[in-house]
Image 1 (cartoon, rainbow, N blue to C red):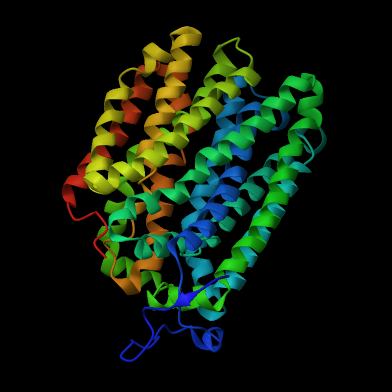
Image 2: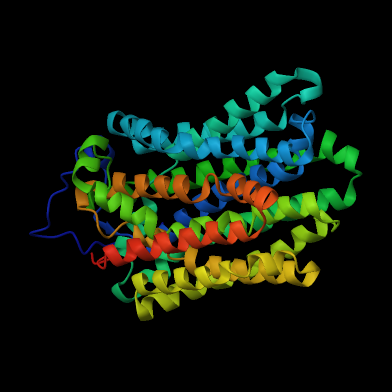
Length: 448
């Protein structure tokens, strides 16, 4: 890795005082890491995580109701599947705190290795699970345990690089660099949806449900192995260690962070609520609705969603330019208002046949990209330096838990029992929550 003289070095430079720099920094060089290098680590890490995420999410709709809940009708089986889907997000905040203890006592590298090894193991174990017809209720228990394992692993995979990227980006490019890690979401969806679409198109339904669905989980395991070594190569170098410690990006005790920065955690999570609510309403929910109440080919519908995810990538990229010009808080607020407006069209579009459904997917993904592209940038600025690492992780965990964890379950339950108009109200509530949080904290934009 090429390096240039560090602007932090020289006479008068502040000493490194992070409590766990110690032996890791004995051979550190005073170097300045380019934001582009940090961005590589962020993109690699997030893309691999989101691929795992969407492989499970798509299987929750297309596979698990038939394989693990054959005793229930299709709607109930899908709702059961979504309930297990949510378990990962429930486990994630507690796991974050647990892994931060590991990091404080050992190292960031050990924590990340354990977390990604656990993620890979849980993912590949899901691919090997016997079906309900062989194991009965124990297959459901095993699925739930492994899903919790994925959530625990996600809680431990926080490496601090998104915060480091935001802090080291040029002053007038912070919106652009903040969105880079968010590219992992639509990228991961395109790869996962493409795999499932191909398998469903090429295999008979019986072959797909017996063995075909397991293949994407094996691919996810392989990607996890590659991502583990790529991220460790970045995070464990002396240069990165120096820069992480320079910005005090080490975990702080959770009780201390919550006591001193609890308001910032809540406001930061709610500020992105519209994005996280929309996240599953254009990916997982419509897939389940079409599967249950339409005759469209699921392989073809996945291809439409892949095109939508392509628009999502465009939206994420555009969000960086827009945020740098108009400010992150203004961008998030404007997009929350547009999402609120979009929510009113859900019944018309989803009941509007192929044209209406495709419009919902394409417009929804574009709005998601524009909004989600800046969602993570809202979590770093308000925290005091010594609380930034833990505060950013807990804010992200809380945003996923409140905004996204139960969205497929709630949306499908409401739509099936009361009508699609209630899904509109659900998304509208997320947009209102974001606008309220942004109005409470006008200093949400990164100021450091």
